[in-house]
Length: 158
Image 1 (tube, rainbow, N blue to C red):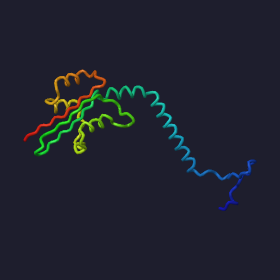
Image 2 (cartoon, helix red, strand yellow; image 1 turned 135 degrees about the horizontal axis):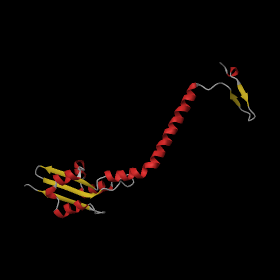
Image 3 (cartoon, rainbow, N blue to C red; image 1 turned 180 degrees about the vertical axis):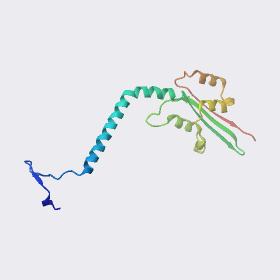
Image 4 (tube, helix red, strand yellow; image 1 turned 120 degrees about the vertical axis):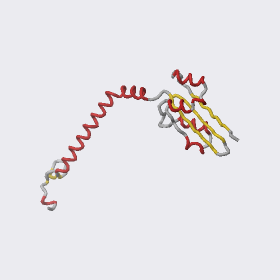
């Protein structure tokens, strides 16, 4: 089929428009896009209706404190523990400032690979002997808005 075989419609705007029927693929694509747009609109509506509840749920599920720990044992070097407990705030600008502060506290990047974030139960059980009673009582209260506790213990066995 050549261009001359296609029926054209001359319009007043000076353009010629094809009177050839649209291929089925174009209708299928239009239907797919319409369904996609409806799904996105429904999702937006659902988000608008439930966003406050979702935020509250996230607050309930998020632990009050975060815990960090590094244990290092080197033959002839002894045993070191770096421990931190702090409030569990949301990330700011997508950055984990508490982790960055813990790394600054540790100081040497060699130890960063050993950083763990245990749950409160694991932290308080595993390091119970290293957590002072006063700090333990503060952790029990869960009312410290700016609470940060960091400590470094080194035990030399030589």
